[in-house]
Amino acid sequence: MTTTLSTAGAMLVAASLAFPSAAQKTGRPPVENWNVIEVAAAANAADEACLARPVALALDKEAVYIVDAQDCALKIFSRDGRFLKAVGRKGRGPGELSFPAGVSVNGGRIYIADKFNYRTQIFDREGKPGGGFPLPFAPDKIFALDGETLLVTSNPTGRAAAERLLHIYDAGGRLRWEGLEARSSSDPVFDTFTNMILVCPGAAGAFFVVFRSGERSILHFAGSGALVGRIPVDERHAFRPVDLPFPGPQKRLLGFCWAAAWDRELFYLLAPAPVEGRDLGPGKRLSVIDRDGRLTAVIDLPCPVHRFIVDGTRVFAIDDEGGLRIFEVVR
Amino acid sequence: MKKLAVLALAGLVLVSAALFFPSAAAGRDLDECYRDHQRCRENALNLDAPWYKVTIILTVCDLALGKCILAL
Image 1 (tube, each protein chain N blue to C red):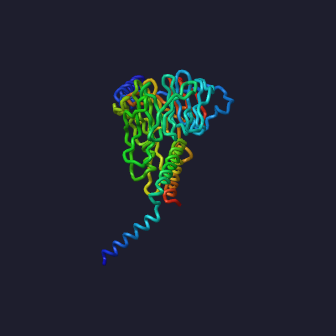
Image 2 (cartoon, each protein chain N blue to C red):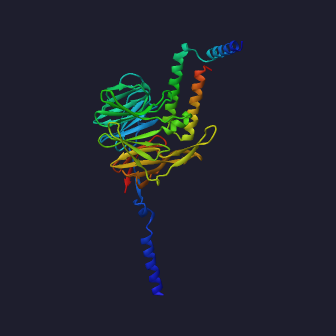
Image 3 (cartoon, rainbow over the protein chains, first blue to last red):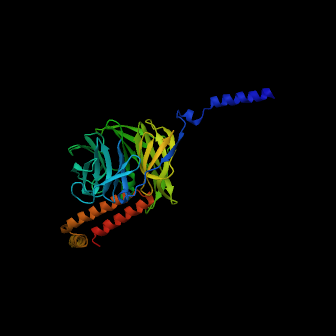
């Protein structure tokens, strides 16, 4: 009996050595589960602290900067979520905003994509306007790649051929580079989705582009605009399909990423999730992807989030109701 | 005779097209139509709403553009 058991045990050990696990077979590390603890945000009584339509956020050592497209304002919070001040109001003059859509901070200067004024604006931390420059298109997001270079994104209008989605300007507003041609077909509404991109600023002026649907490679660009490479993302971060209500043959979008961030050599991709039956919206799960595209961990947030930014173990996110949420990641 | 009839027909088509579609003098209005269309699209995209809903809003933007261009 003992001999039979020990023989069976030996066979099991031999089998496990001969047939390694899926992770070992593909050379991929197992996926860890990282937990989060919500950091209680300070209560904000001021009306100005309410975010009507927060569309972008940025972070530095001092504060969290959120642009509110509806209030036409930049709202500044401390890193523990306490409201500090609101900057700007609706208008066309210096320091005034019309549908601010993007924000970035570098060296104490706050850069804003002032969409319907067709310009960038720069503010200091006190909220004083300090320049900017006009643009020939409605800017969407803005990233200060370093003190001298600004990356501005745009959504294609469909009015011109070969529109570019990425534009690099120097501090004086001179165009240095344009790239990433918009995809176009006979269906402009479908094209809108295939041209939705997310940009993550990287180190030393480099940046990464993630397509929100249909494409599972992350594009790596140098600060000059040169394409450095493509990072194929682990298929364990799966596509989420959604059938769109187009006339004629059914069109399916493969949702890949709702929002993205890059921090300390890791990508954080927010997986889209099914909402209200057949629709696809923001999810709760963050996939942590390393520089080689491997899924290394997943983080399940307590609520769906629309946009987020990561700094070490802190995640600053905008939830479904437009509130700022702060999470601490426990590895 | 046949040639004349073809030319007359072509002329009629051109005249009716010119009457039906906005004239060049309305170029400024066309620009306004496209500007409104862009605002509509940008608003839709920045809602960050689920995609099925965004598709419907974008389609409404396109319909509004057509209506504006045709001055309906």
